[in-house]
Length: 354
Image (cartoon, rainbow, N blue to C red; front, side, top):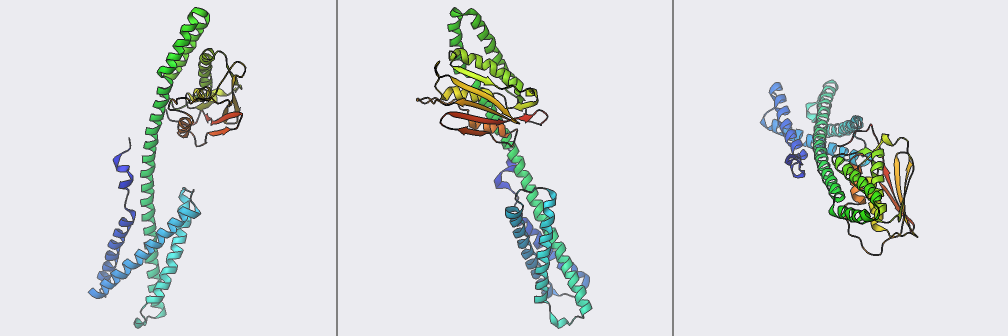
């Protein structure tokens, strides 16, 4: 469950916090300098505080602008620590130009400083304000990183909640009364016709339900176990549809090393059975092929004329479950003759949700 502290409405007010700290430093530093030097009165101190605040506020605006440009245009996909180094260099360079021309514009000629004293004053002025620019940048970056961490945590918790919901819906869909009722109806018709076949039917039905119940809490299962379950499920469908369906599977020697969400193959086969007509003359052909780290399930297309009630899970459900374990997308292709779904497989050594 997502914690209330991570909601969007309770994000850190970065701009407000930044300007509060700028206001505090604008009062603190001129006051400390005035106390140490003893050269400023109330009016000059007030003017110095106001100027310091304005300078730091402008620098903060420049820093926000540079960070926004870097985030939106230059490095939108870079999240490594070294992405902040060019940002800092650009910010210090822009800050230096701003401070230099501001110093030239407002310096008071009536003091008639010697070039040496003016040079010392200039270097001190530039150094202090550049340190301030760096501090503001680190402050803004820290706030942004903290806010990003909160958003990522909230997103992860939301995904976990959605994943649990999707997995529950998948289980409900498979262990549903319709599937059980259809299986029992087929079994009742087999008992008197073929006792041997009815016995095989019972064995495969129990194997299918055992797999469903055993994998209900699994995030990933091996391709080998999924294919073995599909054999049991497809046997039940063959009997139910009177051998009007054909399954072709390509052999994959390393099937134990590849993983995918449980019941994925069964859902794809069920999707094909649900939306296509079939007959002895024109059976439904379903093939499973592999290419690299992807598995493709393909069937010939002969759509039903009547609408079919949905069980509540389909390709969107499969895509959501895949998104929790891999960044690779599910690819769906269709034309007038074939419907094809390409599923990414995951190596067994990959960490996954379970």
